[in-house]
Image (cartoon, rainbow, N blue to C red; front, top):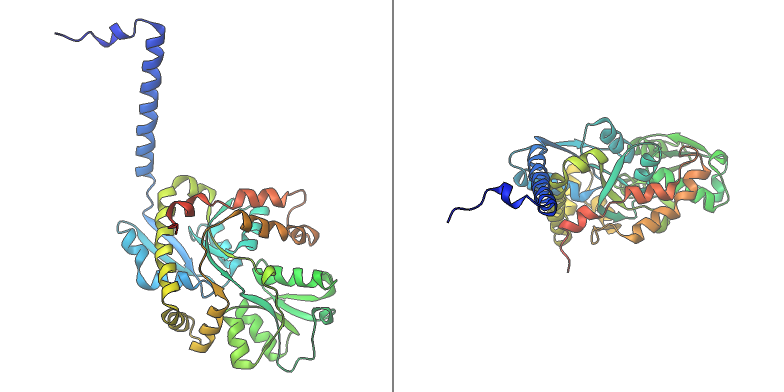
Length: 336
């Protein structure tokens, strides 16, 4: 028996509406599939850093290249959070490794970025002095020279340490030097203290006998992998693929600490004992962004405002809510 034409079923308004909704839904769905296929990147660019041992493992073993056989994978060395975020903002990389508080600072000052993964939770910074320094407290740094890399976790750590000791930024002379140069300046006696960063800090301790003047785990922010908002919108599958590869590297790092130390030593050109010291202060067990991470970042918000590090009128807590994006990592991290 022949079927009635479509026009027969669409003679009532209700039937017509149902048909239109179904057709539009299907069209939108197909459009979404087409767009997803169209936005697969031909190249994926990431930074790697000695302060991010997992990135070294990922690069060394080529797991991302295997996961993205159709894409070119490009690696760029980062010497600090400020460089990493500069690369991201300039379009030199798609994924940037930085301290979480540095990412907050970048977003608060106009960089539309999203943090999607925790690559480490480390006590990677402290205030460092020479082995023969008479300084015994942060309060004694008043009027002294401190080397710190502006826009990085060590710089923000320094400001929080000064504030806790009753000092302000203007009570000391902050010299903006990249981390390796800060170490050199300290050991040569050009500065009184240095806001250190591992592995350079561990190297200075072991090779030059430098002393940690002030430590505070709570003033160390965690390490995050960030992307731009545009990239998050256009390449969500690429992000999940990269994070899956990061998870493979992280799991290897957790299970093979001795091999990780050797890899870190080889890549950084530093002695094995330096790499081992750095890794004793590095926690790779929890890569998932959480409400606790938001709280930790928000606890540091006042220093960003009081020291005029963000634009006037910016709501830093709102910035943090917009920055931290746990959905991508939730999709790839295996739950116990």
